[in-house]
Length: 466
Image 1: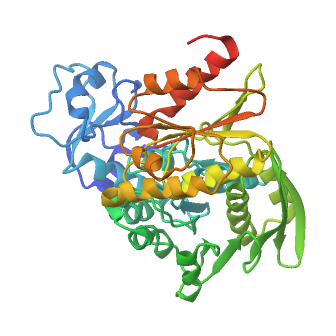
Image 2: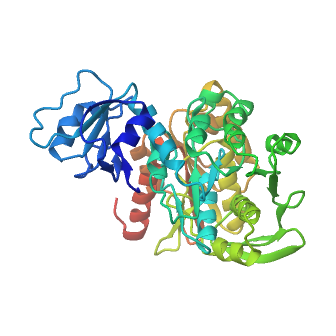
């Protein structure tokens, strides 16, 4: 973070200045009392399960330079003689966003890309970052820093020498994308797809679309939007009033598309076409959905004038983030695939399809956990996954959680096992047939913690340890 003075913070957050030096430079911001460092400014956020105000005393003891708080009864203990600067606001989360918005406005020459969608946000972001980095300095949000806390903290990574910035944007409540887009003020907006995610909040795909398109509406006239032409909902955007639209699709009918897609166990290869030109690309990933993510990144880069060779170079250096088709092979040549970062109906189907394509000659086994936040139709969506599996060449299915019972109800496979807890699931896996032809895909919502089952099962197979 480049220096931002206290007087600028007070103006940005519309805060009440209680004590401190208005000309004090703010060099970094923290929202975590456990990791706050000497000289940082601390925002005392209040969430559903935590309240930063309870730890203000700890922050003072760690010699934070300043504190932004909102509760009248906040306890500052006895900070004399090292009293931090103090600013009181109506809401600390809103204030954090307003500070990030004011800070972002400094970087008028930086090309900023916002990415949202039901699936593929992180992969598209990482590929695009690699492409941009081939030309100039680029930053992006790390991990899952894509909400009203993570995005502002990521914006503070901007500096004057950054030419490109890529930020993914997630949502779990109505209006969140609009709030994030208002902070980010993107030059370009990308929607990867519209799927069945967070339906507990958005009810249906139309509700998801209404939420996501707020990103596109925030793009200025001199910017452009990137949309997935294979998505029937997004394809309609071509008829809307955005100044410039660049589309992508798997097999044509778009500005950027793929041809001659070949699926291998460890990679996919394809021709990437833009205009009258194309390049041959090999990516160390699985699944056509990752080809689509690469096309989304390529479409954006093309809009900025990147040539296909540079795009190819960036795409081919991509490696999947943790828990996204992450693969381990045991000493006995059993393949375990960890795709348990998150799950919704569309992503579960895409992962199953990808494994079936990559390992067509293997014995494919599914280890699936509940898909959460699907609302009143959750049982129906789980049943639908079972019906989808029926049409695939699947050896065995192992299920974890309450709602996954509805997957079992729809299945006509012989080898179907269900558990309500991780230990029972592991005990079943420990006695499962596993050979060099066996492939196990682990997929479920983040809260199901299937990555822990994955790790323990791998250790059991590789080392014989439970």
